[in-house]
Length: 148
Image (tube, rainbow, N blue to C red; front, side):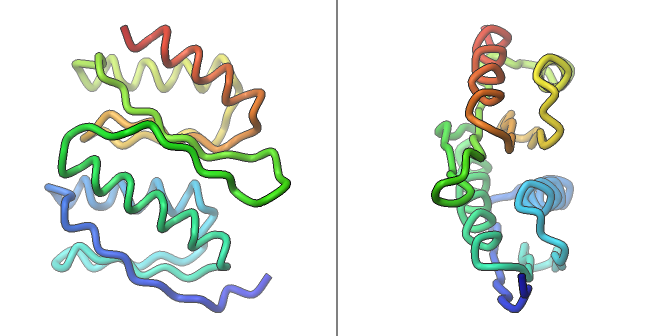
């Protein structure tokens, strides 16, 4: 498919350059975007991709940036395309009090489910995955069990 659409997103709520870069890397990877260019001074990222890729990127950027502002978020799920059994949920862990515990949970979910498209955003303790309904249901159960 042609990658002829370019969008610029602003992430004003990311508190550090590291947080900004972490969100951009996560969104670029989950959305399968080949092109993403950051401008740290303005908290801006320009991305180029298909309309479907950019719709997913928009949803993720908005959700994760809002979570950066409040230090918590609302679990959300995005359907990649109509008719496809592929979803991108965001899980916000509320009881992962240390970075180590948060990463331990993410690693456990990755190893038990085999989901390769699993990325974390440390500031709001967000885990973002991309996979089928069946694998995501197992991941959701594991996250719920671990986040107590």
